[in-house]
Length: 75
Image (cartoon, rainbow, N blue to C red; front, side, top):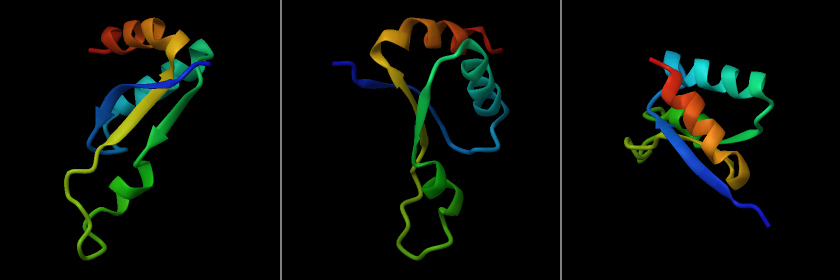
């Protein structure tokens, strides 16, 4: 059984590398999941909210090599 693997972390959903990476994964047909996307967006609104939450982008184990290659191609 395949497991999700974190490929990259981003501090904001407005990061251009984050946006481009998601688009390139979509184009390549690689499914991904995002962890903390909503939490990082509302960070600071709620008292006691952690300030170091990053958005994690994860792909399944079988797609790791291709996803890393795509990520590394982004300048």
